[in-house]
Structure formats: structure tokens, C-alpha cells
Image (tube, rainbow, N blue to C red; front, side, top):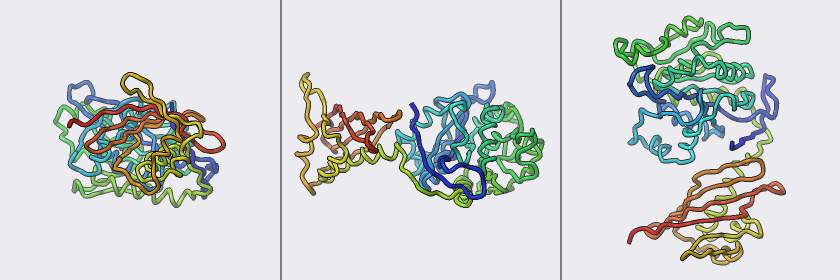
Length: 372
């Protein structure tokens, strides 16, 4: 089931309807090897997480697609980098990479930008996908942004307009140039094309910096492209700058996902911080909790649970939301609650939306004690 993110937008200078969503689409690849070789390849983790972090902090919702959908290979990971480490251990985020959408599951009218991430895998399966091309063309034609980084630029190699002409004819485009490839190596010989030559053949003006790792990027109209991983932050900020010029947000309504998160946080933080009123806000009046103790079913009412939370009495509980799955007016969620040096609880919630708000109607849970 898909989580629906809806944000009401008003757009300046284009025909995008006020109901258009404030969303950005990331394009990734399913390729595990360089062509038919046994040399492993992957999507570049840094080139995903750096722009993703910028976009979500600026209020954009991000979806991921790949030609086949499902799990994608990730690599080029630096676990010593604080941002990469943060996302590497973020179950919610990693779940998105495990369950990328197929192109036919995407309504391009719901997106204001498309971003092609890099890594060697980006050379395979993306550029020739007609549905991904159609999505990019639709987004661009609706005043949106087309953005790429490094080998991700391969994804727009054959991008055409509705009349079959190059969508970026005459525009400056950058990506990872042949200059910095080991062109005699087997991995490069497996590439289906040269990025430099493909962009030029499609009437683009391919440009690059003679210095690798200097953050080189190009903004030409609504095309924003970066040469290598060092440009990831700059590319993302330029995309946001254009979107804030082209799209003006009005009447912002919280998405169902945001509302469910708020309800879960009312439960998690209300318990930890001694806020019974906040807890009552999260629960349906007939809410019950269920667990198994000594092979017997133990049931408590929400009121019983709330009565044990004293106003202002904080407890040492560290909670985080693991997953949320929403379909219309029903949702299931999973959370982890850690009481340091004591035990870890795993909570499963059933939530329903009625009278305009989401309430927890059921919770079942289990726990594991820390070794003494």
C-alpha cells in the first residue's frame, strides 16, 4: 500500500492546478553489475542522501522509482560520514530504497521536480525507459525542474519533447565526463554509451570542470546538473531555489502521513514527558492495549494506561517510529521504545481516521529484556 502525500499548491506562471502536490521524484537503477560483466555496481548513496536531506528539510515529499521497482543496490557508502550514517540506520528511509515504485505507479502531475541520482548503476536501464522519459517530460512541461548528478546524467541522454526534439537542445548540461573515467577498464567498456557524446548527440552542450571534486554544477533554465558527488548539496539547493520561485505554497494541509506521525508522537512523547492530556488526544476512547505475559493474554484499557502517566513526571523512554502504512482511512504503524539498560518494546498500532483526525484504536506489543 502506498502512503499518499498531498499538499495544496498554487503555481505562478504555469498551468499546474492548485491541487498539485509538493513532491520530488528520485530516479534510481536496479542494475547490480556493469553490463554483462561480474563487476558489481550500485546507486551512489551520498548522491541520494545529500539531496534527499535538503529536500525534506525544505518541506518536500520524496518518492523513489526504478525501472523495475523494488529494492535497488546501494554502494559508495562512507559510514563515517554523519549524514550517511544517519540515513543508513534510518529504517523509514531505507524502506523507501527497498520498495522503490515502478514508473507505471507514478502520476507525473503530482511532482514539481525529477532528480536522477548517480553511481555506475545509473548507466543501465534508466535512459532508455520510455515511461521514465514520459514522466520527466511531463514534469518539465508543467514548469518543473529536471535535475541530475554525476552518472545520473545518463538518465536524460535521450530525453525528447512532445515533438521528438531534444528537451534540452542548446542548454549546458554536466555530468561525470569521460576525462575522469578509466576508459580502458572493463567497467567502462560495458557502458552502453558515453555521457559526453550522448548529451552532445541529443543537441545538449556538455560542459565540465577540469578539476574533479570542486562542486561543479550548471543551472541552465530549469535543468540543474552536477558533475560529481561534491556538487550534491549545491545541486539540491539550486533546485529548491527554482521551485520556490516557480511554485508558491498556499492553504497547506497536513498530509495523512504527517497526521499519523503526529498522533504516534503524541503517544510516544506524551508517555515519556508525563503528558496525560496529550495521550488522551492520541487515543480513541475505547482504545485497548494487548500483550502476552506468561502465555496469557493481558488487556489494558487506554484509561488504565493514561492513569499511570503522572503530569510532568518524565520517564527514561526513547521512542522512534519504524514504519507507517496508510490506505484511505486506515493505517498500521510500528514503533520501537527503548528503556535503556532495561528492555526494548516493539509496538504495533492500528489507527483509523474519522471526523477529520487519526486516532489509535488498537495497540499490541512485545518486549525483549536487556541482558543483566
